[in-house]
View 1 (tube, rainbow, N blue to C red):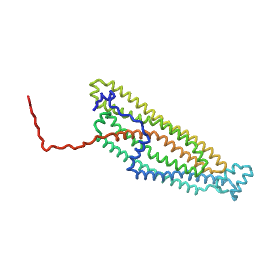
View 2: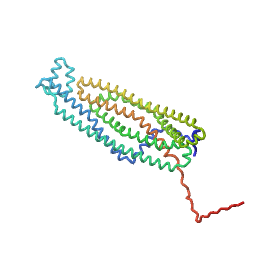
View 3: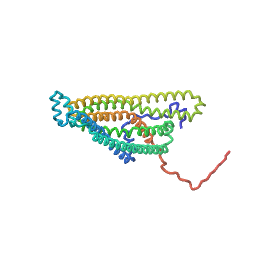
View 4: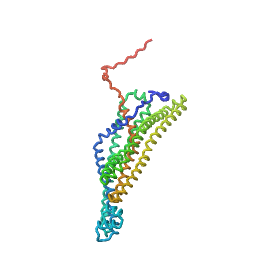
Length: 401
């Protein structure tokens, strides 16, 4: 096996491959096949939780309508009907106010119905409570599936290492192989724990909120969707720029880990041959490469979230302006606009979260590709014909001359 001095001369460098993000991502997801029933249960809990959560803003909007209707009705003359009050306003030249109040279900002379408001708020509280319990269950199931999958990947990797020929380790630095079995596996586990459950929740929230937005107001829903293509372009452009840097980051991490491991295990040889300066120089070079790759990867992926927040704020302004105009015309109630503004935030937030999780997903897939490369390595072939033990063992020593 090549020694540390040979490594310093550049021998045995690991092969470098371009990242197959789609293929490696699919293969990583396939690792969850044994945990598919746990994943199905997790998705079911998440669907129910998100379904209840998206009802919350609409229910709170009804509470707002009840309060506003009570405030308006209290100021109106008792005994008159809503139509009579609105007609009187138009005759006095307050047509704009009459149009706005036409979308409010008030009763002249009647104040706030606190009992009805309290009932609506209790329903909202119950819905949010059940949604929270279901989301906690989904998180537990997700954590269980991820930990089991990573556990089986470690076992598979350990079994693979025992079947590899010595030539595999001769061509590679030992620390680089160890980095795949430790750093890359840990990175997959940590990034999946942080991103998988949140990613599922965000995607379901986008779908649920979109349905509710079209139900409340198709026009405002179309206004909210205006910024989606911009968000998609931002996420796609930034994601493509980040992918190669994450590949480089974990490749250089493996090489730096290999150099450190060999310099410590071969410390005596380094001292004997006076290679301390060369060892320190190589460490500095690899450390600089890791800094450069890590900085580019994190910066390119980290800039996505501020950009998505900017797009989200534009969407918020558009919805608020158009919603205000719809309330002024009487087409929507104040509660509907309040609910829709909350929906626009709930719609933009998952998009931002999905975009911000792109760096975790890319980092995880980059580590997975390095692990799959090791798992796909050619194994040592078993002997074609098993050795035959001789029937009689004899030893003979002859001294001549």
